[in-house]
Image 1 (cartoon, one colour):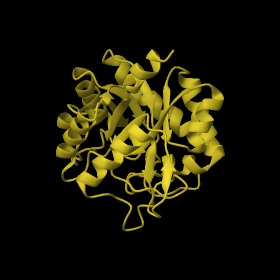
Image 2 (image 1 turned 90 degrees about the horizontal axis):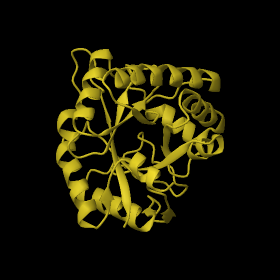
Image 3 (image 1 turned 90 degrees about the vertical axis):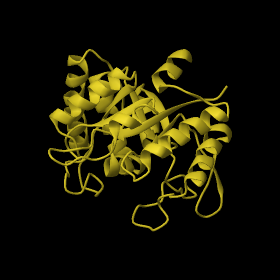
Image 4 (image 1 turned 135 degrees about the vertical axis):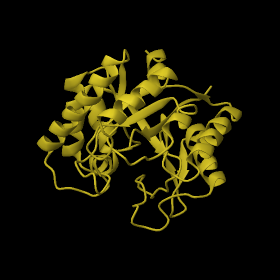
Length: 259
């Protein structure tokens, strides 16, 4: 039987500003990537989201991003590998403390936004992030774009990795995500998104914007929790996976069973 993890970025509210519907979406996902205060989130939001995830048995991951609150971490910054290492260690540490203090354990690390995308292409940044994760805790799982430098760097340093695919994003023929600057980067049709996910998980293929089939490894599927119909879509994705005979469970459980 095919098995996949279903993850969502969460804890992205800040102060008086509320983003997403974390409490409800946690009923549909198996892993939560919780913002660590740089691109989004704050201490109160981090603690509350950790508690919600633990109450529902959802595995928790740190979601470190660039220090760009205004740009939501989605603008490229010219940082060095050393700076990438330090900001990732810092943010993992912050979330780890909240998880530990609430009686839980951290499962994974997934970089956010531009940090994620830059590391997918840039071997130096990828290696720095992988090193940061490994030195904090070599048992943590590193999430990265399927086929990216981040997955390669994680494997090379000895981390368990999870190749990530996206439910609502379109792909290029080299396996990269279509830039958000382009009008066709996000899939808005739920049926198209579901069909893309089922095919990526069951066949290991995705159709690019250039109408080419691309090989892809799908260990975990990302859904975004800040869309207008995010909650409805999360439930639809999970139901569709299970209806297709695909089991949905935290990536940590799957990887543990493989060893």
